[in-house]
Amino acid sequence: MTEVTSVSDARAEADDRTATRGMSPWAQFAVKRALGLVMTVVVLVLVTFFIVRLIPGDPAVNAAGSDASPQQIEVIRSQLGLDVPLPQQFVNYVGGLLHGDLGQSFSLHGSVVSVVFARLPFTAGIAFIAMAVVLVVAVPVGMAVGVLTRGGRKRWLDTVFGFGTGLVAAIPSYVMATFLVLIFAVSLTLFPPAYSRVHPAASFVLPVLGLAIGPACIVARVVRRETAVVLEQDFMRTARGWRLRGARLYGKYALPALLTSTLTLSGLILTSMLGSAIVVETVFGWPGLGLGIVQAIVNKDYPVIQGIILVLGLLAALLTLFVDIILGLIDPRTLGGKHD
Image (tube, rainbow, N blue to C red; front, side, top):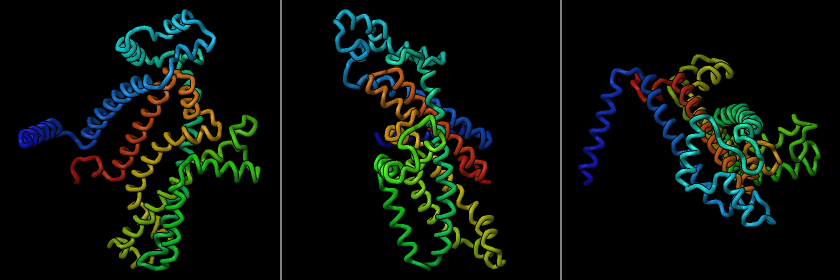
């Protein structure tokens, strides 16, 4: 049975090579990523629809109120479209998606599209600013520690850096967010503890720090390790032999060699930030998708839950695709095609 499976796999692989033979690496990349994106959307639609049905409680009872009679609850259930069989509900849901309709909110009495796009800028804002903070802080710090500890020098610095970044990176995002509120909002009163329309710019600081501190430590550790490896390469020994100054030596020759691993990790971290935003937004009362999905779960608002998870999943898939394109421009070998 195993041999038959292996032969089938080999034939499928050979067919795939035959189908893509003659295509450029970028064309192969586009075909594979397009198929992957379609599969991601299919899985997201299936998961988001059926998972939310597992939430305990009846949305019709929640929407009708605690004093509603059974007849009133049945009327609400019919209005929400929950009285039809589950397969028919799924067909209706997919039909709406094909027309760009995410449905109507049970609790907000509006379209899910408007709810999602009203909250999306808040989540995207703190996630992208946090990612910029991670790159601006972690890459120079990791490179500096890698240079200072090259060849086993200053072991104490390597030990302190590794212990400190490992400890901070292990702190869960909700604990980090709580610490930030206690220190900078309650004790020092430097920033508002929650989102404030009066001080929108100051309201960004603590949620961004809550998202950025842990990932910055992770990226700095990776950059430090990659710097140690790159500095031992032959081209860096040659560059040092030319007696180049530090900024030109490490900025022009070492930094490009670090970009592949750093960008790959940064893309993964940025997609994970979209998930961490659910916790951080709840702590800071940030009016983004994270807080929206928590409120939707409490209200058993199936369409809003489905819409937010679907949009977050698509964003994560598109960000991963964007990072892969950037990596392909920097190093064409990552496309999976020929290495010439």
